[in-house]
Length: 321
Image (cartoon, rainbow, N blue to C red; front, side):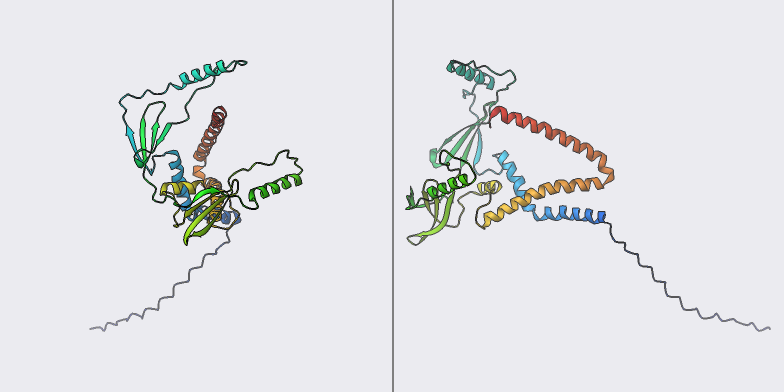
């Protein structure tokens, strides 16, 4: 029997260590890329930071346009059952007014303009305080629809601690400031024949005490009128009125206070809204597949805006509103 030689397998060679992957070479971003990233970041973070103001101006803008949106009063439609006498149509009333003007103006002829379209500017509103509550009646001059708004009593109504009056100070600040205004006009080379008239109602506001009670004092420089009311820390407005006041707050007082800081946010919103438009254009242009459709939308936007611009210009020119 022949011997069979067994060849033992050689031990496996140790596996070679995996070769290290070459690290990708990070090329510096181009100036264009960095600029586009900056545009996107500004667009994003400005919107996040100013989000409360975006909501405020969006919602309160709609509240100005629709008095029944988040209303403070209760609004009830009233069915008068056809008993309302109603107004004449705009055309009928325009003819009546024109005829009366023509009869009144002895040296002129008054007639309707052929291009004019008579229109009412809004509802007729009447106010009453019957039953201890303020009620406002709205009458639609076209449809005759009627609603009654009932305003609840204001829980923050100011309480006068001293009867309002007009004060005469030893040195009237209004007269002093008017002399200063005349001096400014002279320095500017303007020869004003008459003293300048006051514009606006500049006031002095401060806190005082009346018999030890905190009081809010408001002094009007124009005529010396002064109000002294109990100070409770309340603003005296219902929530709807307060948010609408925030929407319309504008101008910068001569002191650093919360209203001044608010005016800075109004400026920031103005800059941001223009910035969002510009950065949105840049972001749209960088996406090639949206350029064609976007260009059409943009052209339609410019066209509609131009039509509305000239239409509103004509409206205000013909209505003096």
